[in-house]
Length: 405
Ligand SMILES: Nc1ncnc2c1ncn2[C@@H]1O[C@H](COP(=O)(O)OP(=O)(O)O)[C@@H](O)[C@H]1O
Ligand SMILES: [Mg+2]
Image 1: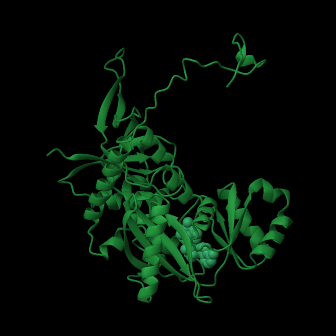
Image 2: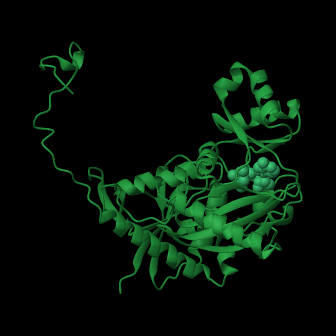
């Protein structure tokens, strides 16, 4: 049987690009090469797309030289999947030629953060009508935006901490009003977070007015919109992964990441023990399975599956929680629709090998794609025949008879 052409798309213009590179190389190292041909596709920070075997090594990215890879373009014609390159013409007057370098059949998206995890790449692949392994456009976008995520979870009746949010313009207009609102509605401490980031970048705890001003300044460096959330004191953090599609899903064992700081930091997540070696999110110090009562574990797994279903998730996600020691209450921290290291270590703990996890992700991508293409996208009507355009008196309506809408 012919091997499936598996595009692994990673990188992109995001603060979490380096984390995505590690997640992608890790994944490529575990793909069953008897079933799949791996086609690495790296989106560089300048937006150019590249392919080539060099993209499977971390060293390629420590001193990035575009000459080591081949620049390509994705043909977004629905169903094409072609990656094309421009071949220079022969001799002095030879015309450059467009050649097909590879054809993607299924795409694994390994992006963290903006321009990839947030629905943008998912939208591109929907237009190109290619199967892909992550949550769709709407779920990805809501899952990326911490403000909308909170509003969505609240609407579903899921447990979230109280919060409020500000745009840079609104905050600049009256920082004191923002401070008063936070003191009145939330009280100290609070957590200040850029709406669309991850990996703890730009996230700060503020314990007073001064800390709040600094935290807001930092958060606005990363985003136009900032979430301010009621802070908990050293909560117990618990994470759970879910895999599936269309409500048919399964939850992984629950892990307890260990933090030695007030906040789980970028270094703790990706540079185990503060060293310089990283194997992505798999580096983090953790207790797995988390030493929590069975009822709490069951509650987390059940809630994770409900969240997955409400957000119409697809593939593998990770949902993070905080268990407040003071009140014994559980709160959702966030959903990661493309989790670090694709949460493979949580599935390994359930006896699922990484290569099997990838197989399942691909099966899900293909199933969702078949499902999408089985729907009707044509609705024939007479509307164009009887159309009259433009409003009376407007420039665009010149020459037309005007008329009803
Ligand atoms: N409300 C809060 N109270 C206490 N700690 C928090 C709170 N919000 C976030 N944190 C800490 O900050 C970390 C990062 O916050 P999170 O919302 O998950 O952002 P990111 O998307 O950057 O991971 C959490 O893992 C936790 O350690
Ligand atoms: Mg987090």
